[in-house]
Length: 310
Image 1: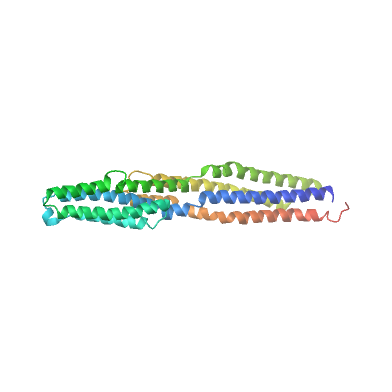
Image 2 (image 1 turned 90 degrees about the horizontal axis):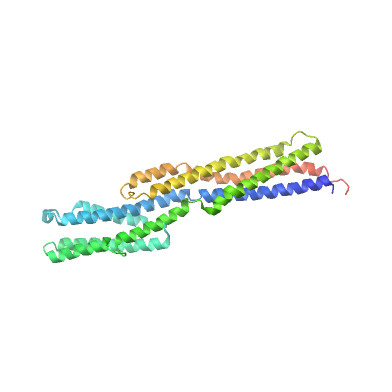
């Protein structure tokens, strides 16, 4: 095998290996950042807002129950509609969020326990109402309802706070880039694509000198194709920025009262991330095209030396 043919064969192998490595790392890095966009939009956001709304509704329900039970019109009006509406809203939110896996199995188990406790809490308020003429029993049941709802580590609101913490932890994992993806984007992807660009440029200079041709159009196209990594890097930055913005919106302390506006804000923030996430399919296609351009650009030059003497 002549020196030129051996060099071209080695260079072809090197270019193909680096192309596969660069495409694989880029695919993994891009997918790693964008993979949770739909999960955050469609699952985590409603689940977090439903738990926050349930906490707020339950807190409001006790305040309304206490006010209603102390009202001079209790005999006529009974427990207020505001109390019943808040309790019903809390139960509905808990039923909805129980269908979600946000927060893991432990959060799901906690929600099932909380749902049972909320029913018991509602029964206790009803008993306080039924015993409205017996001050001792009335106060005992009302105090027991307060304890069930607010007092101690086993109270309903404390349990819901624990569920929210688990949800927030899951959300943090879904919206954080992490050290491995940071390493891939800041070190591996630039290093591999710069290496590929240097190899392509050096190969074209060698071919120009050896074969006296101004340009190899296939390798020139392959070099130009490397620039496609720039919009993908921009998409990644934009996606990560929107994920962080969504996380910020969902960790505000007042989301129990601002569920609707918060949901709309997150939906608007995440709206453009879905098509960016879909760009992950371009990467294997681009890698295949890049490898094909390298092969078409070098194989004819290699074939010119196929029958040269050893």
